[in-house]
Length: 254
Picture 1: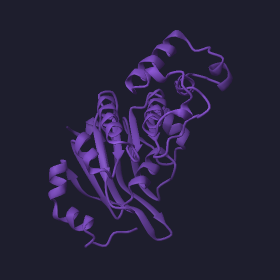
Picture 2 (picture 1 turned 180 degrees about the horizontal axis):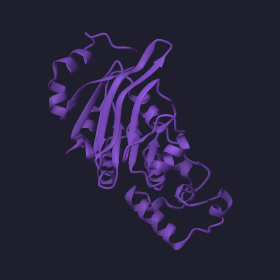
Picture 3 (picture 1 turned 90 degrees about the horizontal axis):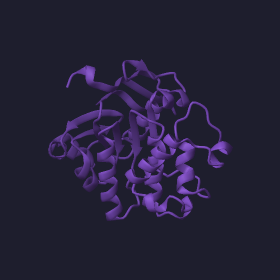
């Protein structure tokens, strides 16, 4: 693939917190419809990378080019979401007292929307069809009218992924999606993310290497705020620098 196939290109991104560089001349790129996994020890800058991409944090310097070359640096989080960047945080953020359907209905991308019209059931036929399709995609069709707060941990994570994809992101950022999940839920999450990557690029931060092996074609390794290695899971695990860092023989920021 060429640079023209890139949906995201972070160029020399620095995030300096009073002398501590959480990101240090970080160069990171993702292609359209790619599922990329980012790993690294604690303090490597993984979550900070997602924060600067989605506009939660403004980097000290560098460029974050998205789509056809739009620089995301300086734009607020809401505008970046509208451009097509969706973020799924580590802890699920759902409306626990509403039904699964209502959570998804509130998340549908609309020209203008309000909470009360949505809750009064004024969605269009096309919107209802999209919600049905999303319920099937995330495996919650049989729980559409259940209270969201009563779902299992894994189901809550799938619901929030559904809420994010109903915003039509072309790039989905996902932070440690399988933390706290059962083996069965973890496997199902892997299948879900793999299927979603047919329609959008996905960046996943993860510590669970069994899960990484399940979903990853290309892995990016961060350490001390910079990319130190990229490649297949096998190539990354065999890299001497990566092995040194994970065995603790290299100085890594915590």
